[in-house]
Amino acid sequence: MTPAGHTALDTELKALKSVERPSVIRAIAEAREHGDLSENAEYHAARERQSFVEGRIKELEAILSRADVIDPSKLSGAVKFGATVTVIDEDTDEEKTYQIVGEAEADIERGLLNIRSPLARALIGKDEGDTAEVRTPGGDKSYEISRVVYV
Image 1 (cartoon, one colour):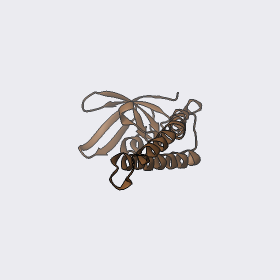
Image 2: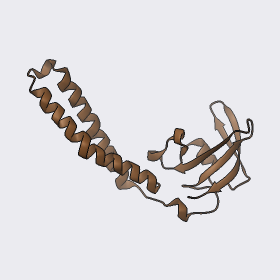
Image 3: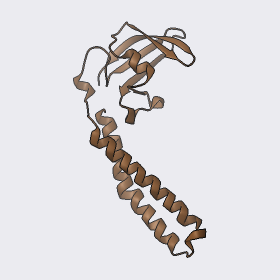
């Protein structure tokens, strides 16, 4: 996991524990005051929210406890975890930039590519100027690696 990914998950965990959890507890207490719990929609919604929050807290604690934080700025060379890679689609000449990150911090919309994705696996070990062949549901794609940096 990158330091930025670790920080983001840690921030989310702290917010869940310090803001969301107390808020849900208050909502449950308020809903209980309304009487009959069997037909109390507010109570059931608050309990459902509590279940989600507690589940996410457990998930984040597990991820963070197992995480190895790797600082990409201390790396160099061929594409590996943490690399920011600019690729050019050889069919469309479209240029895209991705950072290869851990599964928990991946977000393709923000250019954070899961290390287990087919594209990331195809890029690993390659250098600038190399071509990566990727099998996608829409057919095989070829990408030329135009730039590899570690920041």
